[in-house]
Image (cartoon, rainbow, N blue to C red; front, side):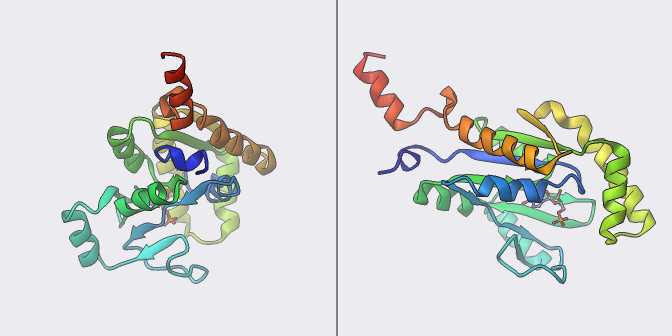
Length: 209
Ligand code: 5GP
């Protein structure tokens, strides 16, 4: 049995304003062996570049309501006051069965719910280097109208106020360095005393601890 398989999955929460580059950093975390991504369910329609089942399970509002009322989500929230997003509980089950750690890329409302249910979840907040730079990145994506950019910037301000609810802050001014930081957090969290592995528990027991 691998060391990872001998303990409960660690749950990593990654949040940050849109344009902070969190998806790129999540991809860096997934390069660390022993991790897997939780595929969220959403009522948002897929973008042209998105294939179903890779980052999202795209479902109707009716189906989302049904799953929410059956308690199938670990957390769920309406993001940008528009579409619904939720983390299926079965992601956690899958991680447990496979002996992998689970990475959730979710917003601040979802992070709060997960932390309540799983207090040992490790929460990472991705900060853009500066407000001006975030604005520049949002414009460069060419994805949003002026109004939408303004809304995203306002929302970024509100989300960033909640940084105190996170265990780690990573500034994404240099994607290589920020990538190394999230990978280091992923590896180091496995040694947290609160995430004691079966192996460590046995060693401690053999010493009478
Ligand atoms: P997008 O539609 O641009 O992919 O994502 C919009 C926002 O929804 C992002 O902040 C993303 O982190 C958040 N999000 C994605 N999946 C989930 C989820 O399962 N739960 C919650 N609460 N937020 C999510």
